[in-house]
Image (cartoon, rainbow, N blue to C red; front, side, top):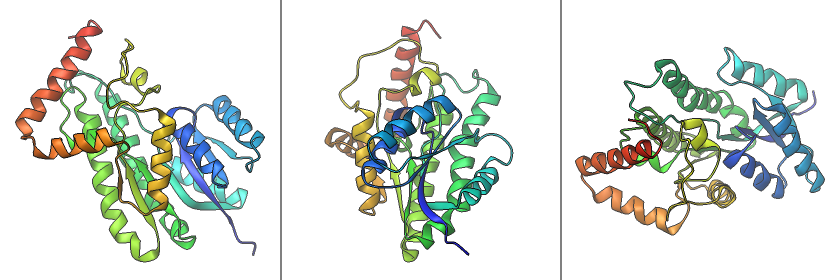
Length: 267
């Protein structure tokens, strides 16, 4: 029986942080499986990576919210003779607005993708990752550290990602597996538009380009760090957050989201 070839599987690879993570892993010699719903974008990225001299990535068009999607992915990988050595759970989205007013179906779909699918992928491929002594990189957010009125479900989902990743890191460490939660702040990507932010804003003091975030995530994963907060300013912000009472954090986040919605003409 021929041994399966180890690969890095990256979800949500068609744009933003996911696409930059694909470029970083490719530069470091990893064979890639690029996963997202937008085939054309994946193929364009795969062609760019192959043109750089890296191994041509395998493109898998998949809606991870579809029933049985993770098992379908597992079957596809098996048919291609590959298995995950590294798993990058980047797929996810957020929604801006009051939880009681936003679509319940959309918010439940957010939980499904940000939490359930990430968990299912991590557990489904933990064995192959351990066999190759690889790792799992879960894209969380600075939102994981604070309650998030105005984006309540999204913030809560990222708190789960951080907690799950750190616990899984402790469980899998004896098997030689690294598990890292990447916690970026604002990143200029398509995330804001998907979240319902229609008006562009200037990058803030803790905003960071997607390629810088991706590089930090890769380095942290390879170093076996449980948590990566990219940039000195974000690290300082995290220290401040830890000292501030929850009531103050709630008020600050509420104020920020109200201003954002007001600029868009929403209530």
